[in-house]
Structures are given as C-alpha cells and as structure tokens.
Length: 316
Image (cartoon, rainbow, N blue to C red; front, side):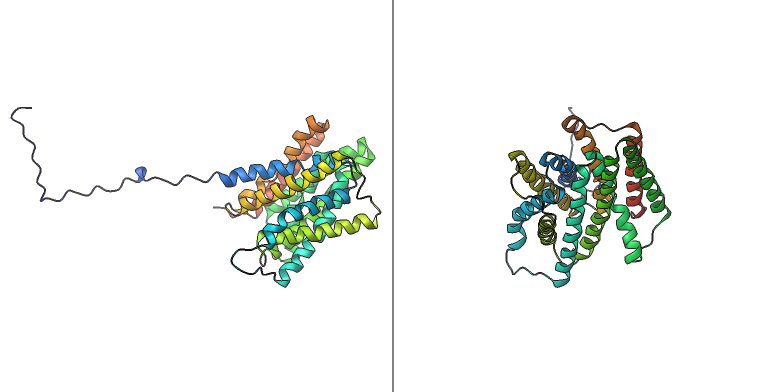
C-alpha cells in the first residue's frame, strides 16, 4: 500500500523458534515382521492338511517333511561368508535332543491327524506352551503365577471337552485326540531344547541340525515299524513336498524372521491362530465340521494358552 514501507535489519539476529514436537517426523513401523507372522500362521495352518493329503503313515510323512526341508536349508546353514562355521558341542547336543523330541512329536501328531479331525490334532498339539512352562518350573525352577495355573485349568478343561466329545462319537477319534495331546508334550521338549541350544547356535544352524537329526530318527522309526517309504501315489509325494517347503521352510523361517524383529510376547500368542486356520481350512478342503461343544472346548484351550503366554509377559 502507498506510504507503507517494510524494513529488515539484517544485523539483528532472529529469534529461534522452539521445536514443535507434533511436527517431528516419526519413523514408520516396519510392516514386514507382522506380515511374516501372518505368513507363518497360514503356512503352519496347512500342516495338517498336507498330512491328510499324503495319506501315509505318520512317521513316513514326518521323515519326508524334515528330510526335504533339511536339504533345502543345508546351503544356508552350512555356508558362512567371511569365516569358518563354528559348531559348539553343547549346541549340537541340544539340537540332537531337540531333533529327537521333534521326531517323536511328528510321529504322534501325524498319526493323530489321520485318526481325528485335523483341527483337533492341531489344537491339542499346540498345548506345548503349557508343558514348556511346567518343564521350566520343574527343570529350571522358574516361578509360575496364578495366571498360569488359571490358563492350565482352561486348557485342560477345553481339551477334555474336545476329546470327550470325540470319545462319545467315535472311539478312534478319541484316541487320535489323546495322541495329539501327547504330541504336544514332545513338542514342548523341542522348545526346551531349543531354548538352550540357541544360546550356542544361530537360528539356521539350530533348525538345520535339529531337523537333520529328526529326519534320521524318523527314518529309523519308519524302518523299525516296517513302514513303506516308497510306492505312494503322486499326490502323496506332492503333499510331502508341500509339508517340507510350505510348513517347515516357509512357515518356520517366517516365524524366525519375526522373532528377530519383534518380542516373543508378540509373536508367540499370534501363533495360537494356527489351529483356527486349520479349522477354517478343514471345513471346505476336508469337509470336517466341529460340534458346538468342540468349538467351546477349542475356545477354552486357546484362552488357556493365551493366559499362559501372558503369565510370562511383564506388565508395563
């Protein structure tokens, strides 16, 4: 406007404006670990379906799953850039014990899948966190809270409802449920061995070593029981390959990746979604429906497992 003149004295320093907290750019959370959890849950959720489609004895399906997966992982576990691979003796011992536990777990669980509903076997096999906590209490003298014992009660009551309904419906189904529960015990043994073994071996080293021992043990079990290793239809071999690459390699590597970026208190409870994925997939792909009592029992088992996980999570 006429008569107005704006002047600026460059000799006078300008006042520094205080930083605006709300304008500070915050780093975006990395979505890849969460995507890895989703992939891991979906991949392991297919495990029971591959076992059913294989239509082979449980130890044989386990042998192909672990053997093919070990072959696929061998180049990554045995070749290390820039140095010599180190294999501590205690780490190898824990991997051997873990592989033995995993072999017994797969033998029972794969047999369970062929004797009961895929969802039941997966649900009861995933009670491993309970037995891990009890084992840590007995072996490592870890303290257990009231939340743990409440979770144990929910899980056992739910498992009784699931198995009891099957015993009333079909005796073979009931025994299949019990085999799934027994598989969870040996799966817990694998977790306990892994807890100690990972102190001396990196993830790929441990997974490969335990998987190789497991494959050898499953081969020995199949041979001792005189189970045929060949002569199956093409569908069975495709299912063996799917179990190895989808469940063992893709699923387990995805979970290992997530554990490298997120705390176990986030990853572990998320894996409880595996039985739900199996139950949902089993309806259209296997034609397996669960009764209302079994849905309620399954919900109780999942709630119990979540309570067990929360009992080890520090409260903020």
